[in-house]
Structures are given as structure tokens and as C-alpha cells.
Image (cartoon, rainbow, N blue to C red; front, top):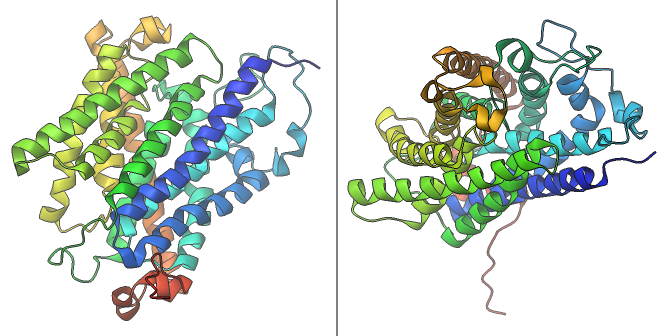
Length: 422
């Protein structure tokens, strides 16, 4: 049976773009750590692809998008077990193949788990990280994805998550499910594993800023699939999300650099790359509900606030190594909450989802706040429990000698850079 070939092509292309973001994240994170930890940092992203990809096929998609079995909290974990039930072509020739959507959402799951690893750079054993990744995906990401991304079907045969259907919060591409979720988990892990030896007294500067810029570029490129692909169609909404993603990211980079210039005396390459990511994070929940001017305002706000938030970790004594909390948790909160101010019927087509600045009152802002708080608390508490469990069962952190030697050698028997005289 025929399918919507144009829409299918766009969704599959978007899925490939989103997968590219995880190797991009590996470069971004890898460049930010010391030379003796770069391979371990990159391997945590690459290993996540393997673990989450397998779990997604087995039961992850079913938990996230199966028919709800518990008050909007959980999809049926056996409904699409192994995905065999989704292999046929759709009955509606205007619809997408089910597996196109499966592929697209798989990449979200992979990236979200990989994001968490940046908070525990330089000190994490690889095997326990993979165990944590599998448990966290199962107990945290898959259920939260159901809350946020699983919508009731029009004919009433499929029921989805409580945030998407009952609360009415707007989260176009994952400000809650991806960024607040990952940021809260990163906070929990940073607390459980503790500070790196020597931090904050020792200088732990990025060893390869060109890697950081390359990673940011790959993330930005892939993020167009992440956001515009979330329209799940090659249509006007996808184009709007695309332009909003560009606008917010540019504004965030400039506002981050301005904060650096005022506070530190000069703008930095690391600041530019970090500002790009902050803008991408903040516009993720908003790109399908605001105008380009709204996107500029969200991006400018996120760039400045995230820059200030990153600096707070030194005052608080929190060794969030690569600023996952300062960028993803804070940026995700900014973007999700500001939807309550800037959402407009002109973009959403829904007169009941107007933000405060467009005459909608406080109702949408309240829904955004409840969704943000619920995901933050759930993710933080479950992440704390899972991290402590892994720590007790197998040990999570490398010992001091291995950390000082470099966990590339002690965990992987490799070195990123070989300087030979031969």
C-alpha cells in the first residue's frame, strides 16, 4: 500500500540527523575534557547508542508509545515488544510507516541518555556507566517520553501520557522529556560521584577547542532534524520550527558572548559553542509554538542566564564537569516556561494555548510549570536511586590512582594521542 513518501523521507532524514547529534556530542564533550580522558568521554556517548538502541527495539518504544496502562504514566511494555507488530504498511495511504516514527524517536532516547554523561567526566568507569544508562533509560526516559510525547489518537483507540493529553503543556521537541530530564539526572549523578580530585583548585581546561566547535556544529546541524522533524511532516510547521531554531541559537550565542565580555573581559570560543547549545536547548520546547521574534527573545534570555548559571557551580561547589546542569537543566526550564509567555495561536493553531503576552493569561504558564517540576523531581529522585544502586553493586567511580593516571588508559587501554619518534 502507498504511503506519504515525502513525509516519510523527511522523518527518516530527520532521524539520521538526530543520530548524528550523539557523535557530535562525543566531540563536544570530548574536546572539553583533559587529554587523558577524551576517549572515555567519547565512549560514554558511543556506548549509549548501543545500549539504548537495543532496549528501544526490545521494549523502550512500547513503554514510551504503547497504549497507556496507568493513568497517563506508562505505556504497555509488551504491546510492541520487538517491534514486529509494526512492520506492515499503514492502512491510511496518507500516513507514515510506523517504523519511521519508531526510528525518529529512537534517536531522541539515545541522545537524552548520552547528555547526562557530561556531568561526570574524568572520573567514571565505563561498565557501570552502561549499566546506569540502561536502567535510567528504562525507568526514567521511556516513561517520561510517554508522559510528554504520547498523544491520544483521534478515534479514541490509543491513550497516551498525562502531560501531553491531560495537562495540556506544550513541549514541541523535548524541553521536559530531553533537557530537564537529562539535566536533573546530571545533577543527581554529580552529587553521587562527587568532585574530581583537584577540582576546583586545579586548572581543568578543555584540551581541544576545535573538537568543541566541531561538536557544536554537528549538534546544530542535527538539531534542525530534532526540532523541525518533530512536526512529523514536511509542512509549514516544520519550516517554522526550522527558522525558530536558527533564530534562537544565533541570539543565544551572542548573548552568552556579551555576558562573557562584561564579566570576564573577553568573549571565548568555548563560550560561543556553549551559547549555541544553550540556544538550541531553550528553543526545543518552543519552536513549534512561538514566532521568530519570540524565538529570538527565548534564545537571548537562555544565552545570558545559562552563562551566569554555569559560573554558579564554583560558588556552590558542584562539579558538573561539562555544564549539563547549567545548560540543559537551566536552558530546558527557560524554554519550557517561556512558552507560557510567547506561545501564539498563529503558530500552534490552538486558541486555548495562547501565552501570557498574547492574551492567554496564566493558564499556559501554569501548565508549563507543572510539567517542568514533575519531570525534574521524578528524574532527580529516580536518578539518585539508580546511581546509588550502581555505586553499591559494582562501583561507579574510578579510584583516585586511575583518575590521576587517566581513565583512557585504565578503562580502555588506549590513548587519544600517540607521539612516536618512529
